[in-house]
Image (cartoon, rainbow, N blue to C red):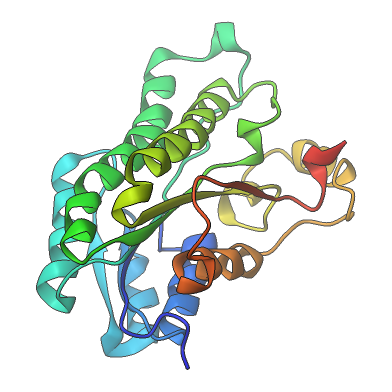
Length: 245
């Protein structure tokens, strides 16, 4: 039996990378999915999945987009069971004294406020159905520092703590909240970073390689499914061993 049969999911950052891989896996496992992105690329992702997936264009830092994507799940598929808060941006690489306030505000707005808004407005829909699963994309940058990435590290640290907080608030009401902490993963964001930065991260990864979006999607499916029914508030690195030494 499909692991997500009968479930309705919203996936943000669905236009590429980890989000696109997770949309495909959720659909393969029987979920009906709203694929959300700001780029327009979510249209192609949804089209590949067929009628069980619809595209929604929105910016997760804007409350109207959050409300719209959740309304689309309710209107098209009847409710909401799973939210994968995956949308994120890297921001510039610059020492803190040279990091602009505008850049910092934008990274926080997308990476942290977007997760907060997603949970805030998804939780009432999940409570109507007796519970649900929220999966947030944090980062190994919430555990260890990456010089030059103050906005990104701060935002992902916030996502990890918010994950634990909301898990504690709603555990008794049937909503589970967990976070995935990717390491260096082969995505457009990673490929856009300076080569020496990525080479250094791979060199410090015990498994000696970069990860794949499918390896993130595998965990997202498990955390979204009833197979993880006694798991909440976890922060799980998928980093090839980077953060264990």
